[in-house]
Image 1: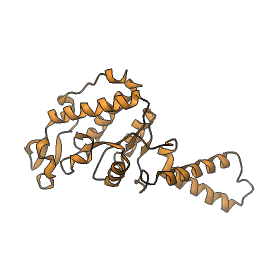
Image 2: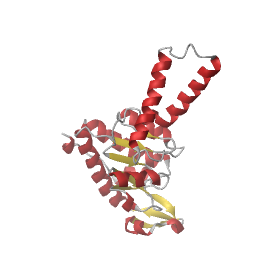
Image 3: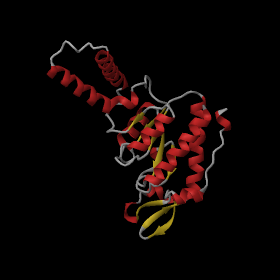
Amino acid sequence: MATDTKINLNTEDMEKAGLHFGHAVSRLHPKMKPYVSGIKNNVHIIDLKKTAEEFERALKYIAKLTGEGKIILFVGTKPQMKQFAREAAEACNMPYVTERWLGGTFTNFETIVKRVQYFKDLEIKRAQGFFEKHTKKERLNIDKEIASLKVKFEGIRNMDKLPEAALILDMREDETAVREAKRKGVKVIGVADTNVDPNFADYPIFANDDAISSVKYILEKVKETILNSK
C-alpha cells in the first residue's frame, strides 16, 4: 500500500547535493527565518533537519496520492531544470510543464483542454495524410503550428482533469502556477528556497532551487516514491 512506502532521507546526502545553500543574506524572505540554521560566506544555510521532516511529509502525501491513482503535475520551467523535470515526470507517467506556464492552465482549464484536443487532432490528421492535398506552403504552416502547440502542450496532452497536486520546483519563477493552484484547490508541493514565502506551499521542501544537484536529488526522491507507490 502507498501509505507503507518507505521514505529514505538523510541529511548527509542532502548536504552533498547542496540542498542547504540558500541565497545571499539580503534576499531572505522573513517567513523563511525559522528554517535557516546559519550564515556562511554571506549566504543563508538551510536547516536540513527541518528540510528532512517536511520533505518526508511531502513524500508521504505523494505516496498517498499515487496509491489512489491521483495526478501530480510536475512544474519546472527554469532552463537548467527543464530536462530533469520532464524526464522525472515521464518516468512516473505524470504530466509536466517545462516551458513557460500558460496563464489559465488551471483557472481556465476547459479552454486549455480544447486547445490540447485541437493539437492532437492536427497530429492525427497529419499522420493520416489529411493535409496531402494542401499546397507545400500550407503544409509547412501546419507543421509549424503543430510544432508550436507541441512545445506548449506535449507535457499535458493526457491531462484531462485538474491534477490533485502540483510539484513546483521554483515557486518564485512559477508564481502564477502557485496562485492558480491556490485558486482551484490544487495542492502545492513546492521547493522553498530562502527568498520565497514557504506558506505558498501546502507541502514545502526547504531547499536550494537553483543548483541542479539539489533539484535532481528532490526529483529522484519524488520519482522513487511514486514508482514504489503504484
